[in-house]
Image (cartoon, rainbow, N blue to C red; front, side, top):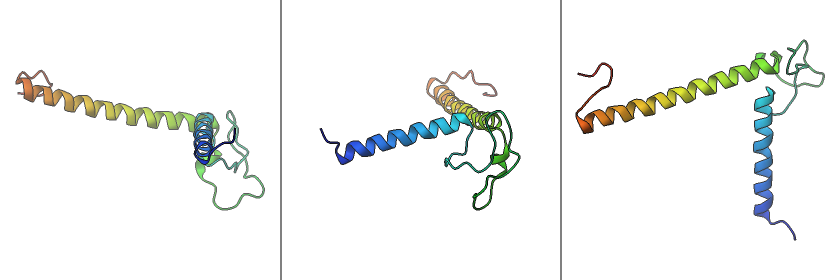
Length: 106
């Protein structure tokens, strides 16, 4: 049975997402272009031949260092979002019930 255009698009999108997740967790450049000789455990010492344009400082870091930075940023953003949701929920509860147990509330 032949694949339809929609099926190919879904397959290509799923493949791109999986490659992106792999690059993210592998600590590699997100665009998939290898610019330095850095590995997951070892930082870069040189730019690879035939690399065009500017090479960012993060490309010189070891993969585990990039992964640590990415995960720290995501967890900080996620916990900040969680705190905002819970704080607004608590404030609404205080207004509705008129029984406030929020810190700093009068």
